[in-house]
Image (tube, rainbow, N blue to C red; front, side):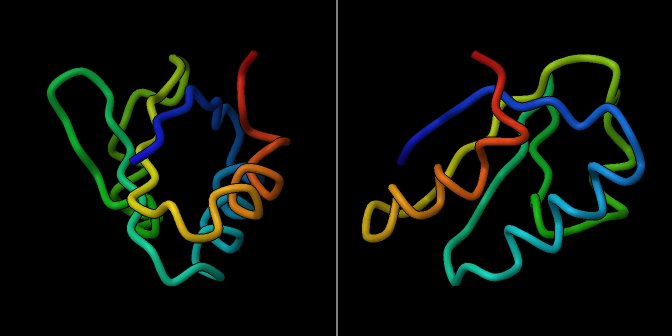
Length: 77
């Protein structure tokens, strides 16, 4: 499992993020405080406080480099 910090601070960013993670056959969880949301659920994402950074857990090691490359626009360094 790999965890990265991401920012989803606009509606368009949320929509493109959900479309991007849906392309992969592994599980993604968004963690904000005590809430854990399925990252493929657009309704779940909008229940989070999107003004703050969110932890993204990627439950896969098989194609992790491909996943991280796709996530580059959202990752906070």
